Image (tube, rainbow, N blue to C red):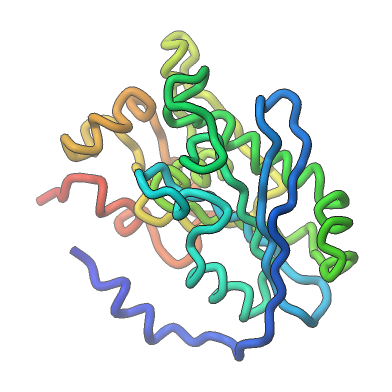
Length: 237
């Protein structure tokens, strides 16, 4: 086990500022089967603000896996100059689809598409959150994901996998070039033999050909390959 959490206290951070948040913002998405609900939180002052897309996990909680989760993390980013946009993915217990719906229970492809939809519709989001109108730096976009959200973030950065609904579809690539960097929090990682038995039961069929390439690792903030996926992967000697 590494000590990244303890060491994080020593990382220098900027001064905090007042934030403002808008929720819910609802985007029509006919191909999604449900409208996309999101929350946007960011500094009350400042210009050319970088954007963080935050992808929630897949766990059994009602509200943590939704636009309303991860409050301490969102506040930390927003108070220090980032605009955080949180979608509610289709796997959410409060605004998603049943686990047995097409694409479920993980809805991995829809999760990726949610993030691209947000970037496509930033004008609409700004109109619904006028405090941010004209203040977003669209050339500076990062993605942060936790657990299954980490898998979503990795795919947006260029990680590849085999589509579990179509074993012939090898090396699926859904790279989003508008996203320049990312943070993966306890993500499933490369999958396959790297997973613990418990996580294999949840993610194995999805991740059996997952690949975290050097190009993807180069986009990750603050860590390298050896420290990214410890919680879900087996420890090697």
